[in-house]
Length: 213
Ligand code: SAH
Image (cartoon, rainbow, N blue to C red; front, side, top):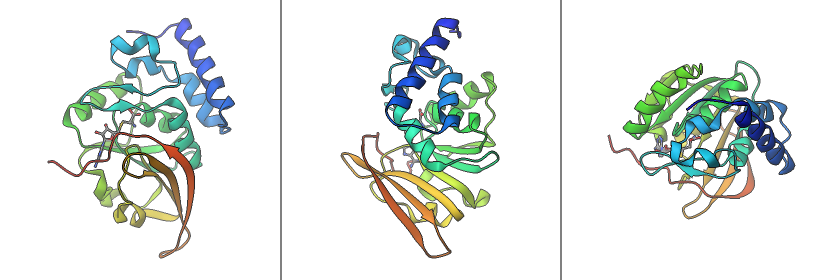
């Protein structure tokens, strides 16, 4: 698989679609225009890579819909150099978006197959996260905390307390909360003990699962 002008053209269109749906952050739109999403998918789905849809990847997981990736990334309000923790590396597409936006990225994945595959794949495209971790995102990543932002890319049945605890003051947790469908929720840390919570409507994710290591 490789990249081509045709793919570039489709990505430009995809960025316009996502913009038309309400995404304004220029860094997010530029990332969508830059990242060869078709390379993050199984070749059988390559033709669909630039539709604004989620698709299956390995281990019964999905690559999130571009609009959803853009929506969550915009809510993080990333500045260059921000330290961001991602829960649910999956295909690495969201990781690549965060890197294109100038963040330092730490990402945790609980499926070993995906962890291995994406750990090998991202550097091949020139994407260098600070760390990819095989483990349980419910615990966050205490040794690297605090973070400017934490993004959860699986549907969380509840808000894990360690994730709130690992935010800087002013830091943001963006997390889809719920069982069948999820409400996109953002917590902004106002002080050691106060969090401002805002809800942003319904989304649908694969479930955030408890540790099976
Ligand atoms: N960001 C990914 C989305 C993948 S789907 C992408 O753009 O492709 C969600 C991912 O979260 C899956 O890979 C799933 O295995 C992972 N996941 C689910 N529960 C988890 C947990 N407790 N800790 C870490 N990863 C988890």
